Length: 157
Image (cartoon, rainbow, N blue to C red; front, side, top):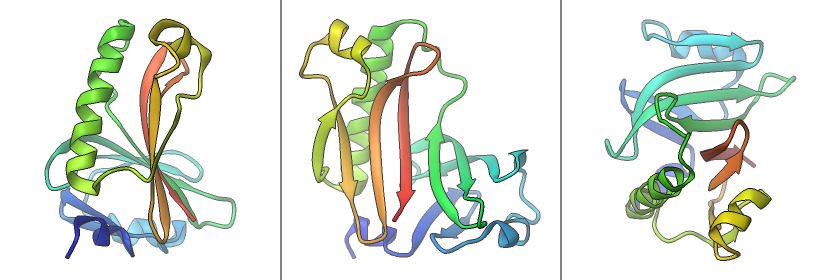
């Protein structure tokens, strides 16, 4: 089985040992996470500490549900990272990109990083990457929110 085949029906969490089907609803999330430590941040948004991608990525998982209660976006992030130095952000981005490619394979396409500051500081060759799978799209880029920040999200189609 190709590693990308794991994305057909959901996301495998290595630690804690869980599986999030793309079809999970907000109403089912409490039962799925019963016994695990997680936080309900706002209505329709939950987070928890996870290890994913064959134990290669350690951070937090954000689960976003739409108004109908369907899982719409998963985001992976590292809240303890220091994003104050732009060069460090791009160095971390490159390291994480190598990890993602080792797990997901080569991206389907590259896209511009979605903010002008990165393009100004790092040139027009600054890119983000997109993987298109049957049920999801994975986007890895750098964006400007409170300064530059690495961004990794899985969008349910």
